[in-house]
Image (tube, rainbow, N blue to C red; front, side):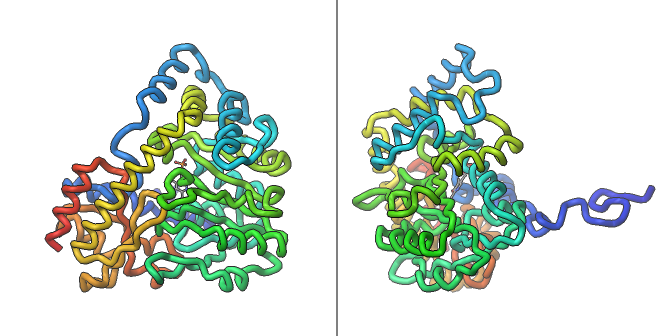
Length: 397
Ligand SMILES: *Cc1c(COP(=O)(O)O)cnc(C)c1O
């Protein structure tokens, strides 16, 4: 036998062709670089402090009381499904039946994968906003779909969606729109007008919509988050994805969910049951308590993140970057061209040595890499002294 690692006996690559284009993610490379150089890691988007103590204690209590230590129910524990439905009602006035219209998942990541695996046939086209969160492309590929990127373009201080371009991207083969607002990595929050147009298009062309709203509690401007499902004709065709990771600063717990019609939930559950079946037992009880926290928690979380955004945004501006001030999320996208650079990937590979900071090149979130070349993303979900130190280091550029 002459097989070697990396090739099977008939010399076929081990990794199947659906996944061949997805090597190790940029986050692994950049986080390793951060460790090797001792640089401040503003690359990967996880908070460097845990969420509320009482939520952590709720998880401990569940564990001790033997709640969730064995397989929880497939759709999620009733306490959490009820809390998710109550949250949608209290925040947005949206009614979902906790028994038939809520499904708990292993983070938003599984919700995205299960939704696409359930709803997409091989050959279907899936429209996604580019730059896109890295798991979208892989999940579309796993489902055998064809991704059709619609590029958010910089202008007027934000990255915006060209609605004509979106309309033109819809073909008879388009099965679904995969949206994300607030948008990672650009920080764009789709406006009420944009959402209304997207909804109109989805209804007109009879499209399903999967909308990733994991940053729903990180909208900095007046008015807050507007769920796409609240627009006319959307309730019957929309899968809305949420997650506890970003809102409560427990990204390791991997508790996410979808809310949708019973038919859509049943379809997505069919895929989900063969991915993880269930997950995060005791954490589900803790997240149920977290979702019921008083408004004061959500307000102070948002105020804290806004202050961090302002600190990092002004530091990056002072260091010479062009800054796209985010309306939502905990990321800032910058343009490195004012620094005399044009290649964000090369810039990010050199930055730890040059300035002791790690960032992520947005080009990896594009099919049209040239469109994303000069953009670099910084995360600000870090302690204030860490951000201050990063800002001071970046001054050397
Ligand atoms: C972090 C993130 C996710 C993944 O959320 P998990 O709950 O950790 O799986 C999904 N979508 C976007 C846009 C994200 O930034």
